[in-house]
Image 1 (cartoon, rainbow, N blue to C red):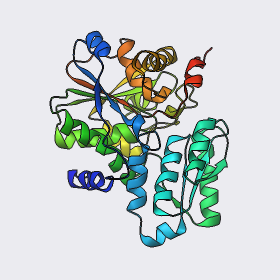
Image 2: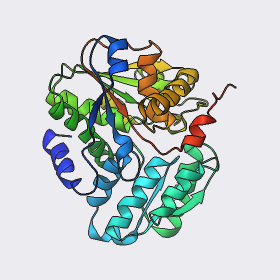
Image 3: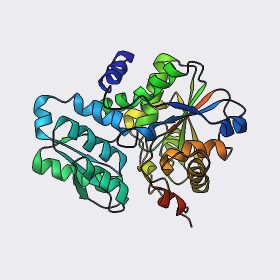
Length: 316
């Protein structure tokens, strides 16, 4: 993946995704001893960064592949992004979602005309059902994180940060399958290799952490966290290759994720879902001590105030 390919993806996103702002949060800066900014991907039209990768992957399909329609498997945000992108192109989209999907994310897919299929509780359950439908109907799969065009689209987050904040010392991203952190890692390695990339995961879903220990992606027996968007059983192979020599790993507790989600909403008027608040949790809990100007990616905001008020940890 070249910087030219990442810049092409950025150009292709004009009019589809927004160039999200960097917001310095004084309370976080004072706590860290360095300027701390939030990259507000919760402001994207479908509510999360996923639109970057989904649109890039679908836009780059051949005309014949577009006519066939697309399908994906997703816990929520990627599914909404695929439905949004397909709607903009006037093509069919099927999204396989978990039986435990939130009503807000389910309605988000349907809002953009996506057809929803519910299957099990794990990413593997969703992938299996997705493959069955592909065999039956011949749709084109748009993977949630382990695909070059998807990761290239997510890399535009890193491109924007480096361009908008040249003095950035650290970029912090939440990790589920690794598409976002992998894309940021690739962009940073090409543009500004002295920038530190930090990958934040829930303690109950340490897919990247375990992969680093093993030197390759490994399958976790199970995952559990209040951050429902960060629960794949394994990090993607391609994101891992981009991250392994670039991004360090930080684990945060569910308690700190809930606290950060509520703090962002109540004190900063920022609607961040639990997965998107994980980066703020890393700083507020002390698990991450920035060494210079730092950007925390708020990856998504598909949550409502009532859900935030009712949040409890998985353990509770």
